[in-house]
Amino acid sequence: MYGFGYFNPSYFIFILPALLLAFYAQFKVKSAYAKWGQIRNERNLTGMDAARIILGPEGLGDVQVEGVAGQLTDNYDPRTKILHLSQGVAQQPSVAALAVTAHEIGHALQDHTNFAPLRLRGAIVPAVQVSAWVAPIMFFIGLIFNFAGLAWLGIILFSAGAVFALITLPVELDASRRGLHLLQTYNLTDGRELAGAKSVLSAAALTYVAALAQTLATLLYYVSLLGGFGRRR
Ligand SMILES: [Zn+2]
Image 1 (cartoon, rainbow, N blue to C red):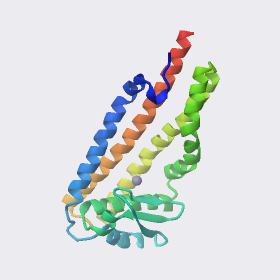
Image 2 (spheres, protein in one colour):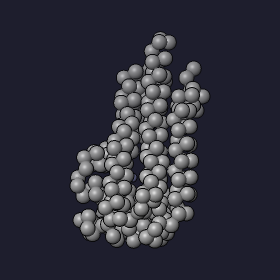
Image 3 (cartoon, rainbow, N blue to C red):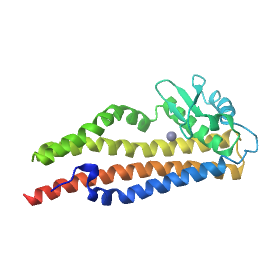
Image 4 (tube, protein in one colour):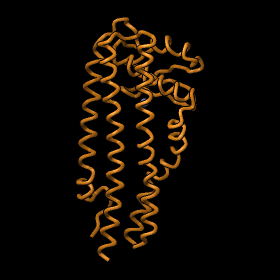
């Protein structure tokens, strides 16, 4: 008898390596942020200061900066052109604050320059949101009632999430690359601080790799269930 999705023990065997990677990535982010969030940057600049220095000269004068609750919740919204900075980033003059601000401005630059992966990722968001809950339902109905076509359709739909996670990687890596470049261009960090900023952003990038691994593992699990089903008949 087949279990149902997330409650099947064999699912955990599929997802375990990706889960371990996700835990490791979270640990790396927290520890890098804890370390470099404590270290004051040489020029004593907060994330808000850095945003004021960078945005205008980069042609991003229309980008508004607003606060957002929580920790590591910083983001740039291409629809509203608002750069959201968390309190720790906006108000503390740490190396981590500069790294996070520069990364988010990297996303604003992607938006400004019509960076294709960012556009593509934005375009598939609605499909991903629908498929995240419709695809598993289609898949398991197909599996239980022996409609292989429906189950495969569920798998194809579910792969939209994998495509999203895949496109996220170049978007995030490029934003970090742009961010580190900005820190150098505007002389916001010295050599050691730049290395610290890089370690914060690399740890963050790893969480996106882990998310992709989780999606691919789930996809593989669905395919294996369907394969096993075929053999049993
Ligand atoms: Zn990002």
